[in-house]
Amino acid sequence: MPKYNYIGKTLQGEPRSGTLEAKNQHQLARILRTEGCILISAESGEAKKEKRKLTISISSLGWISLTEKIMFARNLRVMIAAGVPLPRGLEILASQSKKEKFKKILLNVREEVIKGKSFSDALSKYFNVFSELFISMVKVGEETGTMEEVLKVVVQQMEKEHQIKSKIKGAMVYPIVILLAMVCIGILMLILVVPK
Image 1 (spheres, one colour):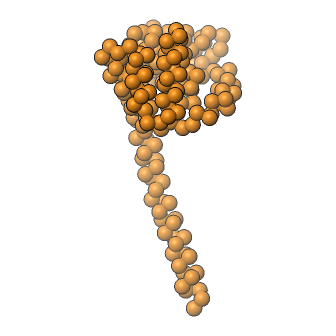
Image 2: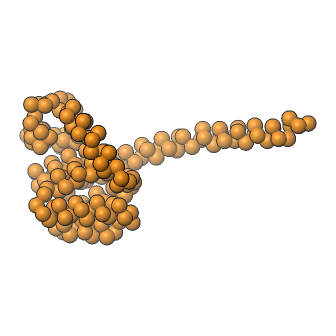
Image 3: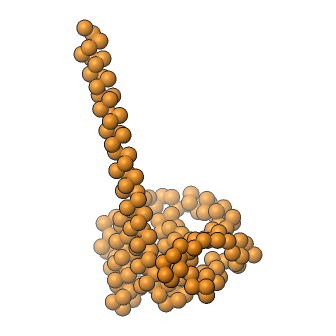
């Protein structure tokens, strides 16, 4: 059996990580669930190899912003809480998406769900759009019937990620502005001072 390095979260919200043997991530999620832990992400050596191969084949899908994915997860949670069937919810969210590529992805996922695939399996085809955390959490939600609660955790995680990225971008702006100012001053000195 392969060994998985996993990251999880207890039902109390405390982080947990470690290594466990399991046949697959599905079984790993079940094992952790019995221990009161929700699987956030897990990866084996084989998974890394497969990921490299699949990334090339679906890289043409383009980039979907983290903000759009947060809105998708948040709105999907609201619809599930309201009792909207998943295929209908995906159809509504696809129609609301401003990004054509994301709209196509959601409609493709919807078709797979209608054909009988689980939501997590349908999402896993687009793992360069939906993170391993997202897909793993959705799988846990399906297995335990707690999709609404799981999506709440997913949204919180993505919002934290967004905040961190925003802070990093903000911290990078100031040095760039200073560097540009120094370059401009240098150019002005070469033009105005050196000729004299």
